[in-house]
Image (cartoon, rainbow over all chains, first blue to last red; front, side, top):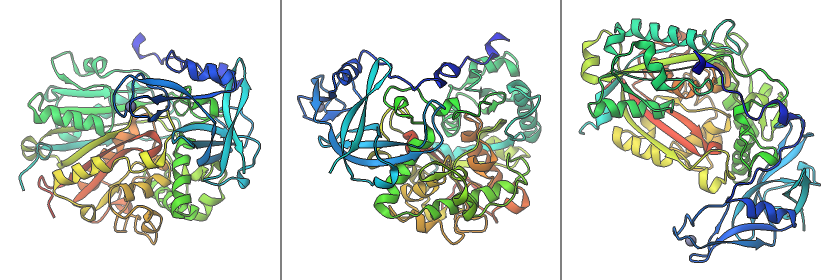
Length: 146
Length: 389
Ligand SMILES: [Zn+2]
């Protein structure tokens, strides 16, 4: 009955010791490469001007293949946030804040708010991007601005 | 009102095994055997009468096609790998289009998760745009709840009221994981430790082992059978892409399920006020509030007030998650999605434990999914083939 055997879970024990690093795909590699240079990139459609994130192979709004990577100033506001007390894995020290950021260009991304306790945060709080080293990668986090 | 094809399909048996944190000495195979035997005896059918199946166990990787041999090797219709309402819709479509007459749908999970240091593996999707920020299922749903609370002023006490109501139901259900574990008050929910704001521990679903299943057939055959029949009178699915791969932006996902519900209500000739039992998916307390708004039971932003004053209790106007739901009955892989249809069947056929039986219900709404997961499937059921009130 070999096919009944439980499949080995890919991300169990080994990942508990270290914070997870992004594993870029061909599609997302430009975003993660830019993070290493402290730049935040999202796709923008040349035809309809809409921003697209996470990256797509063609524009989901007008279905043309004229997407190009654009640098974002990395400024925006907190769309929503949660203070996490039970961590994803023990590698995280708690509490930490996860948030949806609405960039000024209108696109959204998941991220972390650093340098501020949740008690000082509110929805619509202005934030700006800051790049944090994570192994061989850098991940885009955000902190409060005025 | 003419019947839609769904209304010619009936559920004629439904069964759950005992649900528990851990079922000692049980595995998928022993649980599925128990389910299959009980469904056949309940419906007084033989294995030969079953000409279609969708039996699977996603986490243990048992595929429906592989499970076919459990009922003998003869030719049968076979479902795809999804579970829950989507599987019932698929099977109903197969019967409605003449591909099969009587289909068994079942699901089991045992022997899965035991690590206490981290959140369950299936709640930790490894996607590049969520994992490295420490997100997991509860946190994604929390981002939806927080946004709702900020823009509408929804109170944590409303979430706690939902959680306490559902957990009290589970206390009374003999097959529930939390059977007899004590009644829960909103104050206890608010006093339980914070998982990710605004969710306290008791706002969040449990993890379980268990099994369950049901049999559906044509309404015509159901009338000839000795079994209690419950009719599918409407259904729909809303999907927005893969769960947990992008930010759950409330403006985009807050009303997921609305389109599906509207279509289901149209098919059934029903409206929200006609629904007697609300077997809504309850991965987190807030999702109950969200669904009342998304499905049109109340206006956007009014859900927190809508659930107050006993309205969602067993003897209230819109009882929710009457077996204890994902918060205290069971949450075993994908089984809990199918269990929303099973409990709707049990309510409408009068098979619930006495203290949880809603008084003479004629209609029920079952749902799967949620805002944070970017999908919501709905099914309307009735104890008459034509449900119009
Ligand atoms: Zn475009």
